[in-house]
Length: 237
Image 1 (cartoon, rainbow, N blue to C red):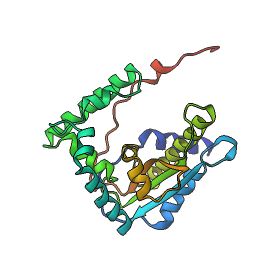
Image 2 (image 1 turned 90 degrees about the horizontal axis):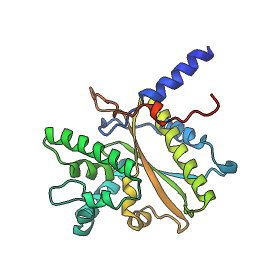
Image 3 (image 1 turned 90 degrees about the vertical axis):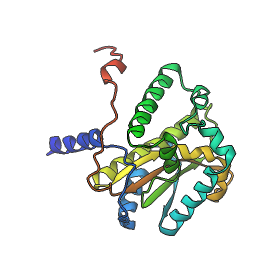
Image 4 (image 1 turned 135 degrees about the vertical axis):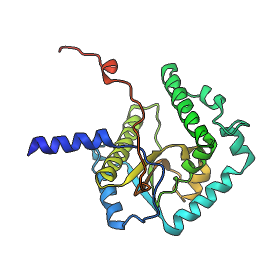
């Protein structure tokens, strides 16, 4: 029995995919609560549980999307994110704090995505705009944490706990037959979104999780992963 459970858990981890196209079927409140409870079970430093959640659905989610679309129409915001061709501006990538090897992986992923979208007659901007809106999911979970000094070790522990809570929710949603996607790009709106969500000064948005039934016949393909063997340094074995 234990081996069967282990196999189910590992298969859930391996088969999870990011979903960006959802049906209009609403997510019952009790299912959302189950997913949130999974997030609440994540490990945290000294059991501090440094997370809070704002769940948007129905009219509240519609209002959020309309507000974000207004922000995206602002020339300043559009110019900061995209070039004149409607693709993610390379200058934004070039100013990233990521190390070179991760930047190269990011560029390859964006190129692969851009080529795929071009075949569908779309531009990267079209996808990013829907990303900021939480795609077309019927529910969007905003993950809120306390503002911390990320240069301080304790601050990093809090950020790690929040990421663990998000991963728990992604896996729980997948196990329950829902599609989900972790969205960090909405943090680009900074204080605008902070004020919109009416957050206290000591709080900050750390990401969002879309939840919903995948669109019918949607084939969720796994993004190519580098083999783990090249990321391991064995010592003592």
